[in-house]
Amino acid sequence: MMAVYKREMRSYFVSPIGYIFLAIFLAVSGVIFSVTVLQAGSSGSVSDYFTYMMMSFCIVLPLLTMKLFADEKRQRTEVLLITSPVSLTSMVAAKFFAALSVFLVGFVCTLINLIPLYYYASGTPDTGTIVGSLLGLVLIAAAFIAAGVMVSALTESQLVAALGTMLIIFFFVFVSIFNFSIDSYVLRSVLSWFSMLDRFALLTIGRFDVSAIVYFISVCFVFLFVTVRIYEKRRWS
Image (cartoon, rainbow, N blue to C red):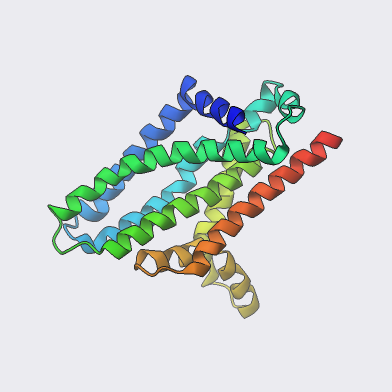
């Protein structure tokens, strides 16, 4: 597993993808923080910053995941990967953790945005809100990266993988918004279950909601499990 993980980490930084992701991610976070917090001049608007950051994942996270398996197909190295002594579960997990690690590098760098809260914004920052929101962003990013891993396993086109991941993220983020226009209570209830925005909102108010955390981890597990099944079928076909 470590061999695949190191290979993936190396591939992010010998190609422009890792640097492009970090540059875009840091630029987006800086702009969002400037608009939502610095211009508002209030620490109370920090929840808006975290909410918009989550929405930005629709654009930035597919950059990380689009190459994971699609590039293997394009370069015709997928067969070598499948027939290697590494188990399929370890292979999928290694690629997932490599993408998550690159995300965490950028995410840690964005924490510098929070420093002005304690010096320039009016009001005392709510530490519970900040910690809950940071935890929520990491969990949501992990779930979305897992979705991107699965989509990348289905195609050899990085563009298709990126677009497919964007659609899945868009659905999970904005399903609660479309829910208001649906008359059926049963359908609304089903769609509400998929809404990550509603669960993330609980964390942004400083509420440590165990069910929300379990939900994010479960979504992550399901996407990775499906990816393993895809490659098990491919190995024996």
